[in-house]
Length: 123
Image 1 (cartoon, rainbow, N blue to C red):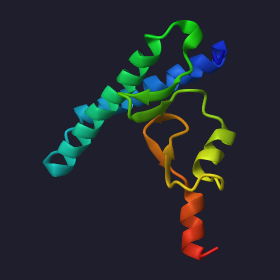
Image 2: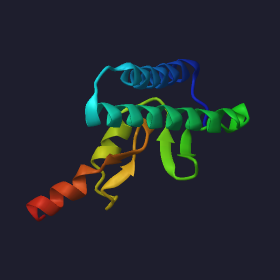
Image 3: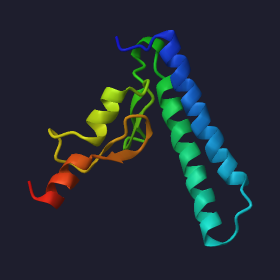
């Protein structure tokens, strides 16, 4: 069983709500032109992905919720408490040759800087 303790669950939910609120603020921005349209579209997509991932988890029985997986079967999400060790293993992982890796908190992908750094310096 991979359930989060009460406080960690609260912190993760708080961070998810902060992501949604920030995206909704972007929707209300008065910026016009192509940049404003792109920002609004990305905000709508962000809210839909976070909502979709939450619905995916909440449809599971409470004992089966892991707060990580793939939304719509393709886009990774992870709403477990963000820890420095997971951040390090996401952004600097010598055992993973992939540059794009699932993010350590939120929805989408992050960059694994280890393969980029070693291809640039030639080690």
